[in-house]
Image (cartoon, rainbow, N blue to C red; front, side):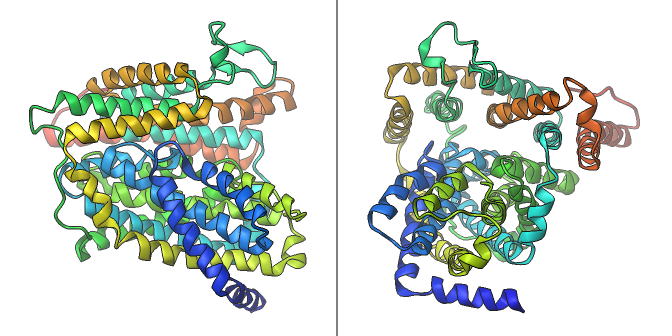
Length: 506
């Protein structure tokens, strides 16, 4: 009952006219920033943080603004993923797998509406989880050390094998390419430059936006140009803009399950929406069995990752508020915003600044309602991009992509690198190699390496630390299950249909 009283007080803070207006503005701006490829929530929050401080907004109002932008970016990232096959940020990568095929079938509006609804469900589940379980989950998150995080990363990569159905080897190849790209640049432990070829432009490593724009956006442009003289591969203009009852029913439980999983993953500092969306997509693909059409435009393949990445975003507030440890890169920026106000996040924050904490939590509920109210009516405006002819759409995508990449370091080297990745991505996609595992490998590679090194340094190189704790053992068992069981299921299913045993295929 005490928690409920605090939450009611928080709604009193969040529903003040000023804070309500700020939340609506932040939600709308976050949606716009999220739909622009390469920007993402970190950039959106980082851009607004000095503005909030310069305007001398009260700390609770500033935090509400930044939180609304954060959640709005997670909503907005799905728009370019579905309509253009270009993820707005890493958390929206999995949405492209079924969202873009739906758009090509003329169901872009349905995909956008169901993704908005699933995002709402996932965020609400996670916000309820913050209210109910924040202190408990924060203590549980402390049990994750370097060994546990390494096992978690391996489990995430094991899930990737399920993303390509009968061709897990191609998914594995893509993941290895992504991992290799993540090793380029300055080694943070030894200070040695790795795989730079002596080029100073690679000293900081390869930027995420260069890779994601290259393998998704540029390769997609090449595919669009290839099919410009035929109907194959072209996006059809959508008719229906909203999901129907049958589609909502089909997506309901995947959204709920993915919201819960996404929240739990979001509580783990550094895990983030990328892992959450990959895990839940793979989970729903397994649960669907033969009834699923994942990768071809299955509505569950849109609902699951969208619910998960939004739930993960909300879950990342738990370690920030309770432990003072940022749960994601975006919340790390928000911790910096709090320090500008001489506020130190942590356990004492709940007693010393209850209006700030509970006002923020209440504003998350309101921001999700505002975002749903904004995104559903704007679907008609979003899908107008589908009616743009290729001779205008292709240069437009290329212009936005080029500006986004050039803005990182303002060098032509990044543009050439983007073009190179685009050509490689095009050739790989022609051979049926998926791009999502490549990006996941690139995003998670550095985290995986750093946690492995930390674990090894604790025991002076003894590998046994990776298998000591119950959490690590459980994650290794889950990873092994994801690798071993699916091929066996496919072989026995073929055996049952054909009456004979067929060899496992890559």
